[in-house]
Length: 390
Image (tube, rainbow, N blue to C red; front, side):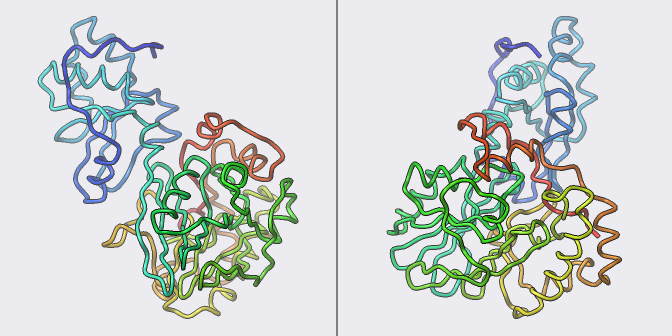
């Protein structure tokens, strides 16, 4: 791909990441033309039930313009309807969108490309007793974070480093001061916001006792198993949910469980990111106990708010990603298996690991560091924290 793409041959409309997300949420057909290289596309691209995506490298369009054979490429674009061209930063795709418009195609460019998609961050309020709970969604990766607000105080759970200022501002918008930043576990798919919130905003970083045991190397407040934090008039109660990692801890807020990476709406956690392939079976057995014993102790109407949503996960009518625990018990086949069958199946089909996960873990432990731009680049791509559906 050329370092500086040429100017588009004609004017063309543009589409923002926020508008694209609205169309995906509505289930509208979306026809994407991704002009990045094949390996970039296969590693990470925009998908969804209503998406038809075609990958054709930018170089083909440059060549077709020179040879006058643009029409020959049009039949290679799958789907029907308007074409949205996509690249890394919206520059090469702007040229392609203009080239298509110049040849009579209804085409537009995704503004700022995949980088703009990765910076999209949306918040929705969840039903909660005695507190305001916001669920943040990063559509590019499926990461879900939470802000709990009560009587002038606030805590953020599983904050992303790329959006630390947002949490502080949103707490202020709710007439609250952000006091705590809590990680449910040492994340492997994204750079945590705990250290940045502590250094830049004087927010108290909180991790589980298990995370301390894993070797966190910066100053933190340790939240013991079954320990709690007071935020305004509500209690945030820790609930050990090991299996994805040894330190995985849920946070109970009234009748809601901020479940981190233990149980999702379509699957359960993968067990290999901390201990590798050799240690995965033992953590899978622990995960089974978490899913069948620890979660079984909770009421069926517990509102489960996971740490991620999958690419094909349907949002609720209000756009949020939650489900009652009783619904998940009925929905997830994994919860109806015996232990050894569960372990065998979950370990026999483990998805690819998140990109750069070893360095991301080191950064989140405090053993490594990265500037903002590097941290942002490290975490681009799918989260891959869930097991394959069982």
